[in-house]
Amino acid sequence: MARPISLQLPPRDPREELRKRLEQAPVEHADALLDSYELLQQLHDHGVFEMLRGALGASGKLIETAVDAAKSDESVRAIRNAIILGKVLGAINPDVLQCVAVAAGETLKCYEKPVIEPPGLFWLLSQFRHKELRRSIALINRFLEKLGSQIKLRGGCA
Image: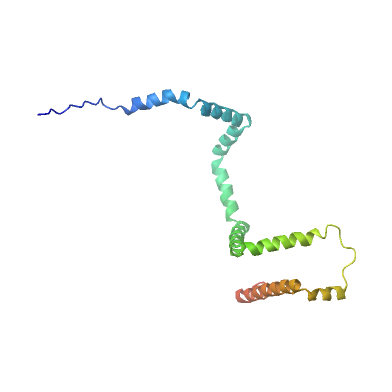
């Protein structure tokens, strides 16, 4: 009959394994360590550590100042406006916004030199023959109608 093989494993010492890894680290990661030392020296040369020590020493005052600034009505309005602008930009179709950007660039490019004489009334009226102008005016008109209805709903500024 077969006899079982006895397996005697030496007890595992996690501290010894960690010590061996630490001994090998400078050899295995020499380039990274040299880069780290160089980065630390540059941070020291530029005074970053002194600034961080000062910031940690004055952390209470810094936090107090930041909280006071965040509590102001202007800051609250700025944060709310930023959120609303984010929603507005998220709601606009990127293709439409691209068209607006291109049209603005092309329009303002033609005004590199200031126009000396304003266009005449008949010239302006003749521009209504173009579909593109009428389409743009309809879009602006629709926007102004929606803006007016929102102002009326909210008992707004006007």
